[in-house]
Amino acid sequence: MKHSKVTLFILVCVLALAQQVLAQTNPSKPRTIVTTDGEVDDVDTFIRMLLYANEFDIVGLVYSSSQWHYSGDGKGTKFTSEMENTAKRYGERTELRWPGTDWMQLYIGKYGKVYNNLTKHAKGYPTPEYLNSIIRVGNIEFEGEMSKDTEGSDFIKKILLDNNSSPVYLQIWGGTNTVARALKSIEDEYKNTAKWADIYKKVSQKAIIYAVLDQDATYQKYVAPNWPQIRVLYNSDQFWSFAYLWPRVVPTELQTYLSGPWFKENIKFNHGPLLDGYYTWGDGQKLPGDPEHTHGDMEEAKKYKRSQYDFISEGDSPAYFYLLDVGLRSMEDASYGGWGGRMVQSEKNPHRWEDGKHVTDYNPYTKKNDAAYPQTRWVNVLQNDFAARADWCVKSYKEANHSPVVKLTHAKDLQVKPGQQVQLSGSATDPDGDKVSYRWWQYEEVDSYEGKIAIQQADQAKASFTVPKDAPTGKTIHIILEVTDSKEPKLTRYQRVIATIN
Image (cartoon, rainbow, N blue to C red; front, top):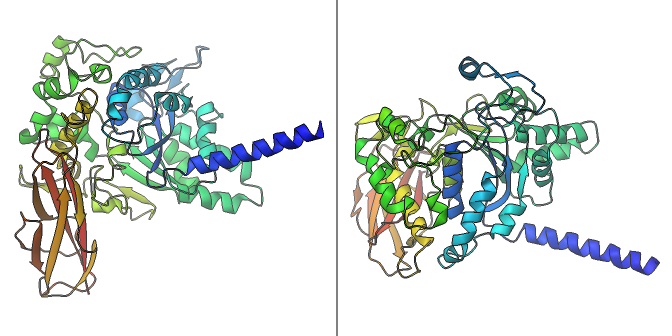
C-alpha cells in the first residue's frame, strides 16, 4: 500500500512538471485569454481570430457579460444598467440579448473542418479539441456582475497565478467583470497574508488588459483603484475603423476592402464552412438569442444604406491584431503604432496607454489629422491578409499566398548624429518565390523629432537619409521598411528602425 502511494506521488509530481514544461513550449508566442459577450461583431472577430490562432498562444476562451448582453439569473430578477446610455435604451430587464454559451464551440467545430488545410500553410495551429478544452463560462448573469466566483473567473485566476512568468494579454471584447472577479478572488485569498506583496507584484506584472471601450463599470470601480499597476491598452476611438460606424471613419478610397463585392469574392463564399458562417449585411443569417441582430435582412440593410455582403463589424479585432508580430515592434511600446492601433501613455496612470481625440495620424485622403487613422491606415493590408488566410482554408500551399519574410541587415536601433548620412539596408525572401517591392517611410507621428526627413532610394532594398543638422539630442526618428509581394492578395510585412540622435 505504501509502495502504491509513493508511486502515485511520483506520478503526480512528474505530471505537474510536464504541465509546467508544456505551459512554456511557445515562449515566443504571446499568451492570451479572450473574454466575450457574443455580440455579432464578437462572432466575426472570433472567426477571423481562428485563422490567426497559430500566431499566439490562446490559453483561455471565456464567456462574459456586458452592458449589451447578459443572461439573467433565471429567477426573474430585474436589472437596470449602470451605464447611462444603456439604462435609457433598455430600462429594467431580467435578461438582455443573450446569445448563449455554445456559439464558440459551434465555430470551433467549423474550424475543425478546415484545420487540416490550415496546417498545410503554417505550423502551430491549435487543435479544435484543445480550443474546446479551454472554454469556460464566466460572470454572465448581469452587466458588471462580479460578486461570485465562476468557472471562467477561476480559470483566469489560475493562469494569472501559474508559474509561467510570461505576460497574459486579457482581451476584453465585452465587459471587464469576469477578469475583475478573478482579480478580486486573488485579493480576497491573499491580501491579509504574508504572500500578498509578492502575489500583487506577480499579477500586476503579468496581466495586460486590452479593452475596447468600457462595456461595464467594473474596470473603473474595481480594477483601476485596486490594481493600478496592471498594464492597460484602452481603445476608444481607433477601433471604429473595424466597427459598425466604419463608413464614417474609413476613407472612401479604402472602403472597397469592406464592401459587399470584396467580401463576396474573398471571404463569404467558396472558402469553407468556417467563413460560410461569417456575418455580413443582407446575407440572410440570424444570430440566435439577439433580436437586435437584423443585419442579415436585406430590407434592414437598405434602410442603413448598406449593400448586400457589406462588412458589419469586428470592433474587437484590434485586441488580437496587436498581438500579431509583423515587424512593427508595437508590442515593445504601444505608442509605436501597428496593426492594433496606436496608444500613448496616460498622464494620470503610467501603466495605462490610451488612444483618444489627442492621438492622431495624418490622413492623406482627407488631408487632416484623424483620431481613427492610426488604425485605419492598415485597413488594406489587414484585409488582404484576411483574404489570404481565408484561402488557406481551402487551397493548397502552391495555390495560396504567404507573407514575405523581412529582415534588416543592420541593427534595428541606431545611434546617429546631426548631419550624419545614415545607410539603411534590408532584405526580403518570399516563400512562394514572388517578386517583392520595397518602401521605406518615416512614421512622423511617432517620432519625438519634430520634422521630416528625406529618404533617398526609398523604393530600394538599400536606402539612406541625412539626419537634420538641427535635430536635438535624445530625439528619435522611426523609419518603417515595408515589403509587399506581387501575388494576389498582396501581403505586406515590415521592419522598424529607430534612430536616436546623440
